[in-house]
Length: 283
Ligand SMILES: CC(=O)CC(=O)SCCNC(=O)CCNC(=O)[C@H](O)C(C)(C)COP(=O)(O)OP(=O)(O)OC[C@H]1O[C@@H](n2cnc3c(N)ncnc32)[C@H](O)[C@@H]1OP(=O)(O)O
Ligand SMILES: NC(=O)C1=CN([C@@H]2O[C@H](COP(=O)(O)OP(=O)(O)OC[C@H]3O[C@@H](n4cnc5c(N)ncnc54)[C@H](OP(=O)(O)O)[C@@H]3O)[C@@H](O)[C@H]2O)C=CC1
Image 1 (cartoon, helix red, strand yellow):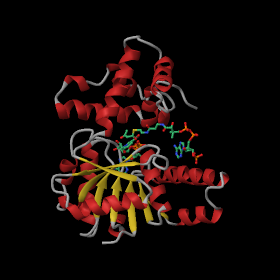
Image 2 (cartoon, protein in one colour):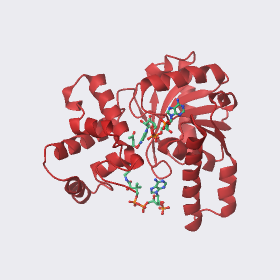
Image 3 (cartoon, rainbow, N blue to C red):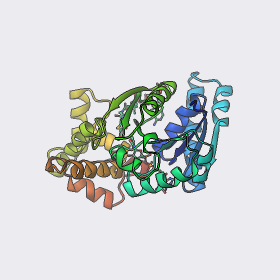
Image 4 (cartoon, rainbow, N blue to C red):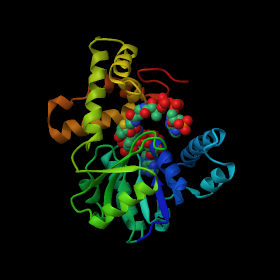
């Protein structure tokens, strides 16, 4: 099967980035969200990124226009009827994702592959709500998508070999480096990254140091491009909490318990950069 049209569900920070790299790779892309203003915000982010590349001389104005012309905005999941490959990138919540996969399974043609950009949720469980579990796969991009090279590819229990191969090829076409991992909570990336972020939050909670000092230690001491608290704000504190909950519940091990300060910030609506406040404030 050859992929021509990709549909991305969720036009947030990940969905808009995935739509951008897919359109840059030459695919026609439907970008879907529940409300028109959300897809328009996603398109504005993509346009801003492409305009920056034009200013830097990395892209011509004609190339930018050609990429934008391959993007179709959608607020109707039934547009899945046009897609060969779907990447779901909505909120990290199993109930929301399974509802979308159930609907996609009804509207998409039989050949369509349904991928999830989930950070931590079991692919096998998402696949089980469809009648095509062999065509469901994890395709986990990193944030910011246009910059980061990695795509973790996660097979569910029933994912077919040819579906894995096609997803790997597609990642390469999008100029990414695919790495295969098995279906365990948090896969590899977030099983390793998120406990570090959670521990940094405990350091704030217990008064070991200020957020600025903790980030400085990890940047200057370990050469991380961003400190863990800046990174948590960048990922979204809600997403960090959901991932810690998946690890905690999935492994049943207290070492993954989410820091109470993380819960408190999320309850307060301090979700990091996207809400204007997290460990730092943003305008
Ligand atoms: C939670 C999960 O499930 C998995 C995850 O994604 S975990 C998060 C993984 N991501 C990380 O760990 C990111 C860590 N941070 C970094 O790598 C860097 O700080 C960064 C790439 C974000 C920014 O890099 P920087 O050197 O500090 O800043 P800057 O010079 O402004 O940007 C470097 C390039 O990235 C681009 N860029 C930065 N942020 C961008 C964004 N949000 N979108 C698109 N492009 C962006 C810039 O335009 C610039 O491009 P050029 O090289 O073409 O000029
Ligand atoms: N943030 C990160 O660094 C990374 C996140 N991920 C994963 O990517 C996914 C998305 O994360 P991210 O982009 O950060 O989150 P965002 O909150 O930025 O975006 C999620 C988007 O999905 C929308 N949405 C919610 N429900 C539906 C629905 N039923 N149909 C269509 N759209 C819907 C949301 O709308 P609304 O605002 O109305 O809720 C929002 O626009 C999550 O699974 C996350 O774990 C993966 C890698 C990195």
